[in-house]
Every structure is written in C-alpha cells, then in structure tokens.
Length: 272
Image (tube, rainbow, N blue to C red; front, side):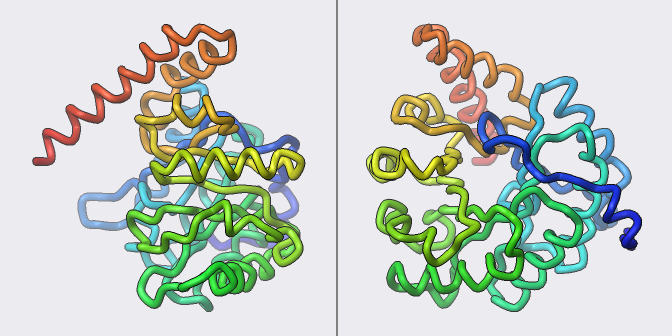
C-alpha cells in the first residue's frame, strides 16, 4: 500500500484509553509462494473482534516473525493493520525492533506516519547492551523518532539474551524516554514483574504479560493485560478468565488457565 497524505488524515489510531486487557500477537499470513498475504488482514481483524472479543493487536513481533521479514514487508503489514483496524480496533501496536538501529528508527518513523497507536522494541540481541544505561540509550534513539507515539519495551530475555531486570530499567526511564508507556513482559520472572508493578503504580505504566500459560499468576501480582499468540484463537476463553479473576472466582479462573496450558502442552508435543 502506498499511503498518501489524504489517506493518513483519514486514519486515527490515537488510543483513547490505557492499553490493557488482551492484545493478540498477530501471525503473518503468507501465500504458498512465501509472500505476505495482505488480502486476508481485513478478515483477520473481523475474526479477532467478532469471534474472540479482542480489540488490540501487536504486529510484527515474535509470533509474526517480524525479524525474519524485510523492512518493506514489515511496513506493508503495519500499514494494512492500521488501515483495516480503523474504527474496529482500539490499539494497533507496531513492533519496530531490529538488529540495526537505523532500521528500527526507520520503522518507528513509518509507524508514526501511518497513525499507529503505539510502537514497541526489543533489545538488540547480537551485540548486546551490558547494562541499563546502554539499553535505555538504544531504546531512546528509537522512541525519539516517533515523539508523539507511546513507546513500549518488549522484554523477552529468552530470545534476546538480554537479562537486565525490568525493575532496574524502569528507574528514571520517563526522564530519558518521555513517551514510555509500559512493558511487554515475556519472561517467567514474576518477582521482577511484581517489583515493577509495586514500584511504579503512580506512573500508570501498562504491564502486559507475555507468557500465556502463566497469565493468571501475572494477574495476581497486578499485570494490567497480556500480549500473546493464543489470544488469536483462545481470546474469548481468556477473556472469561479475566472476568472470573475480577469477580473474584479463582476456581473458575484456574479452570480457564488450565485449558490454555493443556492446549499448549498438546502443541508442544506435536513439535517434538
């Protein structure tokens, strides 16, 4: 899609509320010959909204294999999700992280230009930052390219190898990244998550948990939502778990969490 100034004026994904609840980490649809299949995105949006009751998406992340796509493919997907999500989705968060800082900055500028409601970035995973200041400096250079767009840090140490604790990272981060709004926390270290939430309640950051099979545990320590692949097809069930937890009906909430675990166990066995 070649977006024009007129098209840009018609798109408004500016979030009206804090990012919370379920966020589907979108799959990248492909044609049999390995090309991205943009034509099905409108059906994908309708399916998430109407069948799964999920109105937030995280595009070009791990589930969408964003780091395996070309910059042009990532831009095309971002444009299509923003376009098709207009008046249907609440938040379209575009993951702009890359091994190349200039490429991340280019993707951040592009996401801002097309009207994305937020951007996110992982830590660089080849030449890794060794301390908090190095990581924040990297993230700041990305976020500053989209100065009016909410920025989220995508913490996934199992894949990046960057194990700087988020609790440490958040100390003073707003002063260096004014657009910082929260974390996609894809790690099993619930102590780190709990300390983040405990120490930053006044900041109103969004803490979105990224390990689907442990979401109930994250909710118990105060997570405000979740980003995950299973919400593409188990969103309605997981929303029922959120409702049960809020009542609170912990026995029912556990039932839904166990369903997710059983499903993922089945999938893992298929891959062995």
